[in-house]
Length: 196
Image (cartoon, rainbow, N blue to C red; front, side):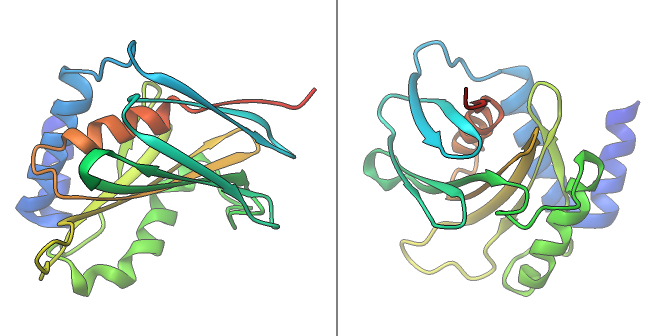
């Protein structure tokens, strides 16, 4: 019954396209959970937060850099450039998420993406929860006029992990949400061990 109510809300707020994207993402992340057992582990050190650990498909290359403000940027390069992914990990202050808590994530995402809506097909930003504990939130938008060779979908999301914030931006053309499913599993599975 809750799924029916959520579907009606999505239809009213984001149109039929938002419902189809949500259903596709739900099916790809819930019914057929991504198998991460063969994924490789990537470790990065963050001066303030500690050891960041990410699991991802072994064919994905991860390039990490840090800025002077205390943010770790991880750019992921997949085989054949199937998508573009950047993950930012930092303190709430470094990511300008100071007053944000879990309940405020959807509103923050709506505010950060609403100005982009004229470039996309959706009428509204529709935040969706992800992860085993549903503590992350993301929204997916469809390019109104994609040029040849450009990605069709922009997905942005975030989650909080203690004093850390994790923000990701994904560019992809995966109509079946297969890339999105893997990316959500990567972001949901990020662990941060505090410095000793």
